[in-house]
Image 1 (cartoon, one colour):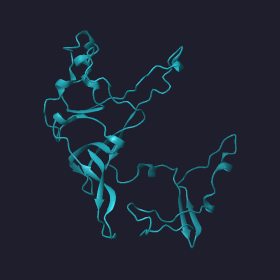
Image 2 (cartoon, rainbow, N blue to C red):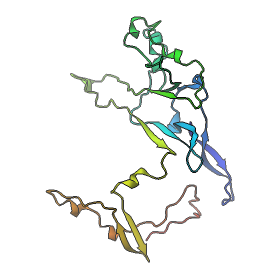
Image 3 (cartoon, one colour):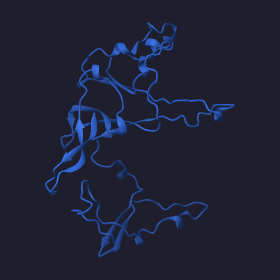
Image 4 (cartoon, one colour):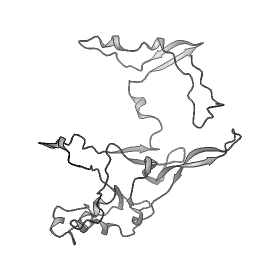
Length: 244
């Protein structure tokens, strides 16, 4: 887990200790830690990495798991007298276990026939086995809360029933994958004058309507020539941005 946490740091270019943030890394060692709750403010990234596969910068390569649209990720009721042990798969938003062929699913359609002793009790999957450099299974809940309102009548359309989860490369690629597209532009300057506009093969929009007339004239672009890198002192920036 990579967590963004508050920090007080003394930088070599600053005369005072600054209030900022840093990344803390923590590894889940066993299935005893495999039931995960998302942190406040989305400050933690959940990453599955291979410690034996480093990129050229020495970083572990893997995939990041990020919750996106949707506000509910697990069952609100934690000790339901009706569901009992059949609900153990829904008490947390994210789980990680060691892969086993004998654990193909976290629940069974017939769990409701005996909720005290269900066919699959997901809690039994978490028996302290090591997660380090093992084949892992990620179990995620994508859910929503539904509080009935008058707007549900006569048919509940679930217009606001949204939930999603994103898996994305983490320290896996060496550059932005969008650079392979033809929708970027590069503008060259010389003495505050645009000298070149590179569109990388992108074609102007066309159709029954003159869409090309709506496109920006990049040869008249006027903007910043430097990008400030965090952290910087807004009162005394060491990398000032000059507007053309």
